[in-house]
Length: 171
Image (cartoon, rainbow, N blue to C red; front, side, top):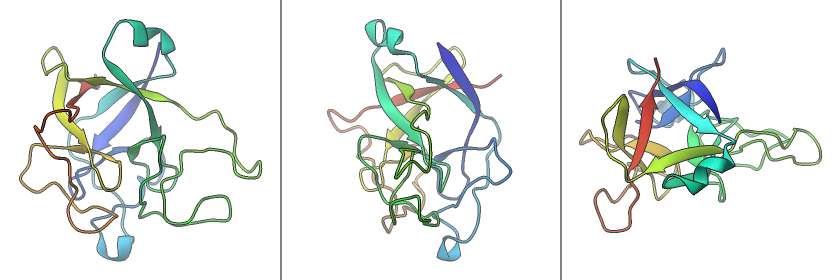
């Protein structure tokens, strides 16, 4: 089982983003999507590429890191992305490193998130997927943050069948 540290919550858009590169990625809450994410204090650790844990925990896999905006998004489908397009990416949607014409390798991380487990023991719950952009967002503040699909993120909170994801605190 492998982990990746350095995941942070953005103060502006409320999405979880990877803060391990020189640039923190494009934030949907900045004017014209021209600014970077602003990290809140603390960071999280995510498990990746560990199929053996499917047998033991209620995990959801196929979460990916968008190479354009650095947010964590649900990978089987690509939601809207505020990041810049390039010849190697699909215009206007999240891009998790899937090879397009051999430009990038297909060996990006497949992240696993713990579902409906609750907080405690160095973990934080109340993370949900935005139904419009498929990004992982924090569900506690009244302001859910700006969504690249327009308006605020939509997560449908505590409705039946909506997953409540739990993340491990880094450290």
